[in-house]
Amino acid sequence: MSARNGVLYREVTTGFDEEDNPIKERLGFSFTMNFWNAFCKLENIKMSDIGIVFNISNPRFFEVCQNVLYCSALAYAEVRDIPFNHSPKIAGEWITEMEQEEFNEIVHQMTESRFFGKNLSGLRANNKAENPEKAA
Image (cartoon, rainbow, N blue to C red; front, side):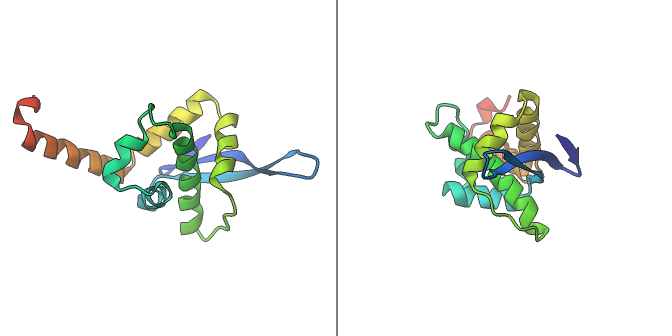
């Protein structure tokens, strides 16, 4: 997996031929505002519910992981007018193909995205204002 300008690139399986051989394609994974918009729509949540869906005790946690990859690849393709004919289910194959370090890099890029960072900063500021004794 390689990264450039906040975008991760990886060759992934995007389907299978008639002999069940994997079809590979190089995709970009972007964690911009477009990603968060697509992710929240797919999950049918508000940005304030992000912590709930990413909780490991969420029974849909693995599906959420698939949706992260799917939406980040979708966001990358849409802004560049690249045809994107994939489903969230194929993203499960992408995760299966990855080494743990590669998945960790996806999570890192997502949590370091400007929008996510701004959202977390706002939550921390609100929390301190509402609970000054916990601010220390």
